[in-house]
Amino acid sequence: MSAGGETEALGSLVAAAPAPPRRTPLFATFAAALFSLGGNAIALVAIPIIALQQTGSPLAAGVVGVFATVPLVIGGAFGGVLVDRFGYRASSIAADLASAVTVLAIPILHATVGLHFGALLALVFLGGLLDPPGDTAKTALTPDLAALARMPIARAAGIQSAVQRTASMLGAATAGALIAFLGPMPALLVDAAGFVISAALVLLFVPRGLRPGAAGAADGPEAGAAPDEAGSRGFVAGLRFVAHSPLLRSIVLLVTLTNAIDAAGLTVLKPLYATEVLGDPALLGFMVGCFAGGALLGSAVFAAVGHRWSGRVLFAACFMLAGTVPYAAMALQAPAPVLLPVLAVSGFAAGAINPMIATAMYGLIPDGMRARVFGVTTAGVAATMPLGAFLGGLAAEQLGVVTTVAGCAVLYLVLASSPLYLRAFGGLHAANAAAAAGDD
Image (tube, rainbow, N blue to C red):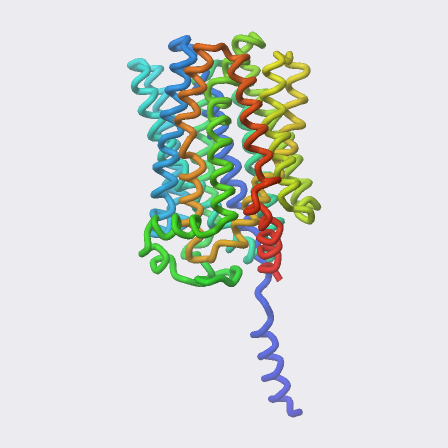
């Protein structure tokens, strides 16, 4: 072979060599989610305490829960459409900055003209409306950024879940400490700062113009479709996709029903339990933090080895342990030294649930539909949360917190065991395997 031929051959090999992994965008997105979701966790602890301090009424706390969860349905329904239209990066940045403004307005009003209950409800509603588009944008980015980083999607989903759990743990613990020493209003200042940092991370480190399929996402019926092509079908296309998938449909229904119970627990029952049974509102932060800490460990274990056994039995077992046991412990009026470890163990089981769901969804959803379908599922799983929060407040006011959490434990057991006997959940293992095959 001539020298020129060797040079030409070498040039072809260099041109064919794959680009080196780019891990910074993926981990910057994970860090952004850590700060934004950590801010949400702070608000989740601080705002119910503010409502209880202002009114002293469990029903009022339930109303705040309604105003916090109704916008999740609206934002989830239209968030996917907006994310597809304006892009993942821009949507994430805009949502985080707008959330920072709405959160910051609460302590500013409290320190100046006074914070009326109606104004608190309005700001909580507006803040909740902005969360789903930002969260959807970051979630939809994950497969493409994982491909840039050359990371298996199951591992990326596990890390993503671990980040979510870490954010809940750190945010709740931060809120508990700040409320104990300074009160709930300073906690919201930290919340707003977290959103600003999240927006800055995406702005500085996530590349512009990243589109579905640009980083080599898995093949599918519409793999590589342009966002506008998928977007032209609107929200209805995502809804139709979920409706035609037995597994997705069953997952959304299960999470929708259990989220109604969890909404009552987070916005009403756990704040009341910390205040009335344990006698210290600041313990709410540590209750949420212990659960999130256990979930963080569970997510890490699942990311390392647990995905090998993904299936309906593990899914149901984790759901029952994560949901039934904490409410049963509260129904028995467990003191803090007993309840906090119980919450940590239950959180460990919960840590595997979201990665199993996310990995299955990545295996089922084609690229061009990703933001749309995630938006639909966000709206779907949040649909009953306002009703759950309201009924939780009403039941606690009429029946008492202990009786109400006992009923929640029974309902959770019935719902969480359903994957064991509903045939649709039999496809869970195959969907996770399809996502893993897309990494090869």
